[in-house]
Amino acid sequence: MKKQILLFSLLLASVFVHAQIGINASYLNKYSNSWTRDFTIITTNDTRSLGLPGTGWELGLDYRLKMKNIRIEFYPSLGFSRQKQDFQLNGLSLSTQTRGLHLGLNGRIYPLDLEGDCDCPTWRKEGPTLEKGLFVQLSTGFSFYGFEMTFPDDNILVDNDAQIFFGGGLGFDIGINDRLTITPQAMIHYYPQLNWDALESELLWKEREPEVDATSDLLQYQFGIHLGFHLGN
Image 1 (cartoon, one colour):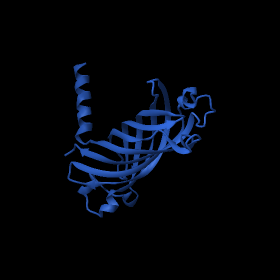
Image 2 (cartoon, one colour):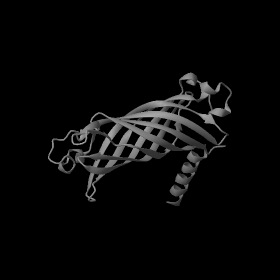
Image 3 (cartoon, helix red, strand yellow):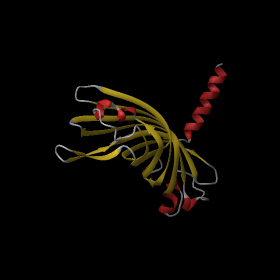
Image 4 (cartoon, helix red, strand yellow):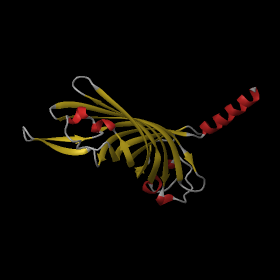
């Protein structure tokens, strides 16, 4: 048993000697077909906007797996997000909050240096910065969402849903030194269907027909910074 533990420890250490771990921070914006509406209040003729799940942020960790002889890299990731939106409807001031746990796999493709011999970090090799640093990113994964809607009387409606997502975007590696790279990136994640049952609740619509569907597809826009820490020699 001791030999097995020692062998496992050596294998784990060998992985992290040449590993790159990353921290990602992103600003989140949204667009949903059914959860974005403008309403006119008949009594005052005012226009109120409903845009869910709202703006927010996401923080995440990832780990790099790179291929040999070709500039394609894979990043298993774990992230947490939070979004908020306050609005008024039918005389009520409502507060919503969306929390998400995200398990993903990101693939980076460097199209201008696909057959390059880059021994990452990329800034160690000679060549144009744009050629070595620009990449296309493709993503897929699974998200677990918790939705909350709070009414003025502190009545809280809680819903949960889980959904697969697909995405794509662009990024650019900026090498600071042999240990750190900073990567600005922009991504779009697409969720085919998310379900938020409270959006059809009688508490929200007060005997009117619901004007917002509980189920909607969602485009999640992400603009952020990725910090990559190289642990190798």
